[in-house]
Length: 179
Length: 331
Image (tube, rainbow over all chains, first blue to last red; front, side, top):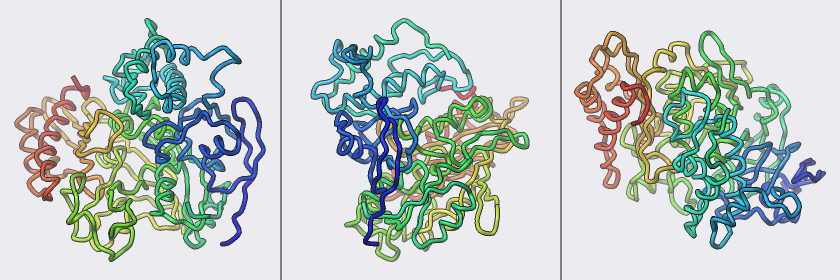
């Protein structure tokens, strides 16, 4: 097979529609960074182990390094570039700045995308590995243990975890998030 | 990654026709397959994208639940009826991987995961699973994560799934479609022990497609007393060294029926049948649990680096049964 085929793919990324023709090997991560000029999403391990490449697809976080772009034809994607409204940062971005939820910043775009999607998931009443009783539905109490477990797919080698947890806690502070 | 041709299947029939092509593979979430393709462990000539097929639903069926093969792991774990009737499945799924991976990975794909044995991943090393008759790097290598039950001279790899351990305990059934039509595979017969053919992970034929996983209505009786315990090197986002799915049907203070399955210990989810038969008719108390653990772990065989799993397995069985008996919630 000498001829590499190209496949038609339509995507909506941060509110912009794209009609593309792609080598089927193209991962969503490489597409965003190399073809769509959106380098905010980072390549860390490229094997789904670090979370640096996390983006939000149809409201949920996934590893863009383990996603073939052709499979996500027709999807709506949000990257870190799509979180702020113009110059107004997303509340989680503001909280990350305030609590120093990063040092080098390389994992931050993935951390933010995971945190945004995680709050949606909690809003829907989703249980986690540390939820005491998965049979009991309803409110999720977002303790620090819950935040750590739900964010465990994002590694920070600088060790800014206390700031990351504090930032997320601040955004949800004092409120039971209802189903 | 090597070049491959891409086919987007729009219905089941087209998917099954397309898989007949040489060296073709189905792709759903792709979280394991793409990883292996990047490492050149898997080198399919064609990928058949099955994400547009209709097997995404979770529905009640014959008093049990039918989990669509293309339902995402995260949707399955948090489905209202799964949480209520089969909390063991919810716990097992949520113990595995990360939020990102569970959001992309499907139920059918979870069953088709390949081992995380590092010698399987490392193409510079021999591996009978990756390349038949090339040898086994793990047998004489670093075998800390490897099997203590059912291994062979060819392969001591383990199956990595958590979800599958719960499905084994609950006697799920795998529904598949092939060129000859549909068939059902009992969960215990789905995955294989390595024997002389470690390259074959499952009894699914290469031209067959998983369409659903059925949880039986009888699995309901364990909902009040089940627990998935996972022991691993870090608190989250790591594969099991040992895991235990424990489910008890307790009535009148006596264990009517027990289900115990283990992960991280064998080439397939390991159904601990000796522990189960020891528990039947006993009172749900520590002594019964210890006897059950002893009965099961007696036949475990460790290597230089994984011998610790035998004592760990014993303790994990006792702990999982203790928590299951006391309502399935960790203190």
